Length: 423
View 1: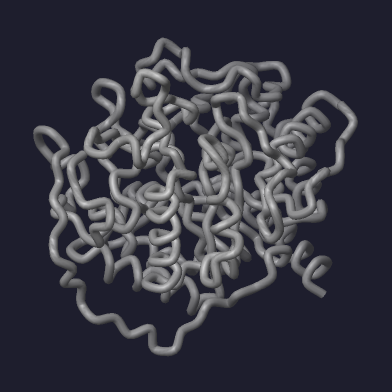
View 2 (view 1 turned 45 degrees about the vertical axis):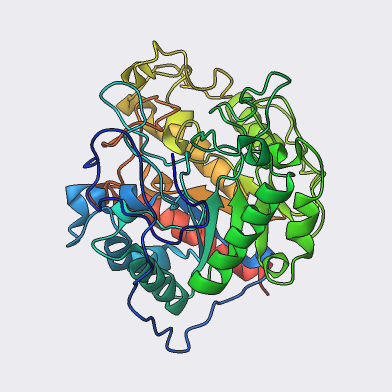
């Protein structure tokens, strides 16, 4: 990667997987069309009133069943906002939409999820038809008009490496080599003066230019390595500090800071997630959250889907081309007697899923669900589908009709949550 880290637009293609050769990209002058927000403002609800829907822009409409004119794009997502409204969602948490190189995956696969940022100011060109800046603004405006807030999943813990002035941006070892606390290599030093300034400038830009409502910080514990000050600077910033700030409070390097982020930060509650799973699947006691502002969830993008959580005891990741060595082995899942699909177990499995969702939506804090769980999406036991550009990740719109009863259950639980927690 060789580019201006402050570039606001990049000269990369708009067609998915259309780049060739080395990923050497150049900044280009910003010539996005003038944008009129027409007075549309954020709903700006209290965090505790949100129903968060974690989702992937491309996956949401890429499947032919979506029927949209421009599948896999910001504009395609706009066409499907009515589904979110009907479900009762009032906040989307978008998996990474910053520019990334989707070709960086195992042989024959891709980096579908996008957790490998190459620029912190540019929306992903492959999610746009012609003008990513303008089209992402259209999406935010449409979501706000529908009463839905927008939180971005941001990755400031690692990036593609570059050697120019790497001492200013990366966390290096004693020999000057890149470290790997993120599990993805090239750990950024969020607390160096230049990297801290870059993070703050990037966050402010997304707040002011794109009107986003907040950020979920991927592997946020990594932002405390190499020193201190960046978390505090984000918190006290007059623009960023007024937005929703959500931490994934751990990293693969073994650092867990759950319960240690300052107000007004919220945190993904991994302990509560595991407790719900053990309680329903194995009759273990249910532990209450210890966090002041928990983001409660049963599943997220990373791991089993809700349906697979009650259908598989083991991960089945062979299609990721890593000999089934990737992905967590600790899932607290239960197949209830048969590995994989089994019609005779459908009722028992649905009962388990219902219990999990009911506990989730009755718990203090903010509930989050993952895209597709409202129709029992399956990845057939793959619990690390980061590299799969296919049905494992794509939203199946036909399944929303085939599983209408389950969709109605989800709606009813969300309605009840709003009645009880927003009164």
